[in-house]
Structures are given as structure tokens and as C-alpha cells.
Amino acid sequence: MKVIQVGIGGMGNAWLRAVLASPVIEYAGFVEVSEKVAAEQVEKYGLDGSRIYKSVEEAIKAVAADGLINVTPPQFHKAVSITALEAGIPVLSEKPLADTRATAQEIVDAANRTGILHMVTQNYRYKPPIQTLKNALDSGVAGEIGAVHVEFFKGPHFGGFREEMAYPLIIDMSIHHFDLMRFFLGSDPIRVFGRSWNPPWSWYKGDASAAVVLDFANGVTVSYDGSWCSQGRETDWNANWRFEGSQGVVAMVDSQVYTQLTGAEPTLVETVPMTRTDQDYLLHEFYEAVTQGKPPVTTCQDNIKSLGIVFDVVQSFETGQVIQITTN
Image (cartoon, rainbow, N blue to C red; front, side):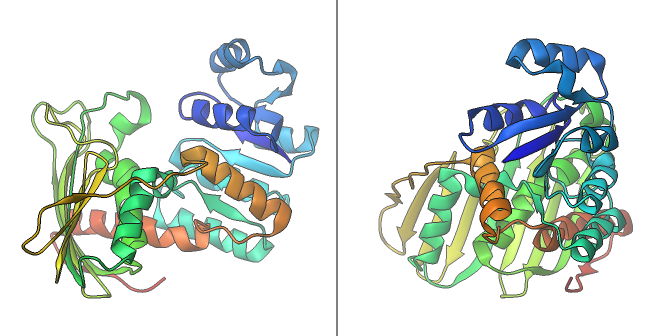
């Protein structure tokens, strides 16, 4: 299977490593608008510089590809993805699906209209600690889950577009955690309420801290507290999770999963082994979907529900209101 990768700097490095290590996928070509980045990546990875193009349209005309990996900033996702879909090329796109609700819906509409696959890389689902936590919850060990508490505190200095966003934490990072809420609970939220703010020391232009409460259709309430400009005592990227159940608690702290039944001592859960994780998992799932017709999980049609939470939360920030969520 041959793919075109659009965007080879920044997060593109993770996909370059994944594709170059894959035994079943190879590059047909690349798209990179920065000559500096292109030259650096040719040197670093030994890429064929003659197959690096300045536009998606140019690349599609020049090479035969079975798929396209979209690693552009969110505001460019619509143009790149729809161009590929209309050319009959399946897309594996970095999250978020798009930068606005309207453009995300346009991508979904294009995928539905063309019948071409569009997947979103919600790679956090495919990490061993996350799969371990999911298995513990599905075992029913804690009984009926009634409430979930999520804490996420990090202080990354990315530079670039993230530091210019109005709501960098919620739009670029919390999409992972919102998607995991849907994954863990097997349900979708019906209402959200939140507040955002930007601490005086923040290096982001937009609000980098937030507190959100989400009510899910299955009756579970989730509280989410996070910051992307934390000055210490950081969590890891997976966040810390606590599921309160009728018979006990399931928790993940620093990517270690524990169960504790009422009146008993905590028990560390053995981590689930995985042959593939993160980008490697999603890349192989994309390969199986394209070559074998195996239905993937994180299609754009499903992922727009996770992205919708982001925009509903932002709407709550800006209006100060509880937002009732309509089903997609």
C-alpha cells in the first residue's frame, strides 16, 4: 500500500517513523510547503526529495497513491481531506477532524457522498494503560459506574499555532480526553457546562485552563479539570482517571490502573500487552480498512461526536450556559 503524507515537520515525524517502519506501507510521495522542513527531513530520514510536492493537487497528479495521511494544522484539514476524498483516495487525518463544527461536517458529508474512508487518529485509545483501564471497566469489577473524575495538568511549550489558539487546551488536547470518555463509557454526553481561564503566567494567547462537567446519556456525570500551563506536579498525557462505582473504584494514576472494592485494599491491574500502539496501531488499522475492507473504529462519522463535545464546551465557555447536546 502506497501513501502520500501531507505535512512532514512537527507531528509529521511520528508518522514518518511509523510508515518507514511498516512492513506493508510505503511512501508514494509527500507534500510540504516549507523548503527548509523538506530539506531537513530528506537529510534526517533519507527521503526521496524528488517526490516532495508543494500541494496536494500536484502530488495526486504526480503519483499513484492508495491512501493519504493528513498531518497539517487543523485549519487546513478540510481542504486537504476533501481534495483527497474527491480524488477517491482514503484519508487518515490527524486530530482534530477540523477546526470548526461546520468544516468538520463538510468533511463528513464529503466522505458520505464519495463513499471513501476518512479516519481520524485518536491514538490515545490505543495505548496499553488505556486498554487496561477499558478492560477493567468492562469487567464490571466496580459495579455500576455513577461518576468519573479526570485530572490533566501539563506545561508544554510548543510554539507555533497552538499558542495562538483561543482555547488551546480544549481544542488541541482535551479532544483526546473527551474521545476517551465516550470510549470508556460507551455513551455520549447530553449536556455540558464549563468555564475557562488563562493564568497570569500563561504563555498562550488563549485560555489554557478549564473545568468542565459533562452529563452522559447513560446517567454518568464526568468532571474534568485541566491546564496546559501548569507549573509543577504534572500528570502524564493520559490524565488521571477515577471511576466511582456501586461496588468500588477503578482508577488510573500515572498510567497505572488500580481497582479497589469497598472495604478492600487497592489492587494494581496488570497492564494489557499490545503488539501495536498509538500511530502504529492506527496506521495498521488504516491499512486493513483500505486493503481488506475491515471497518475501522475512529471514522470521521463517529469522531465528529467527540469533536462536537469540544465545540459544545467552547459554546458553554462563551455563553456561560449549560449546553444541551443534540445527537449527531
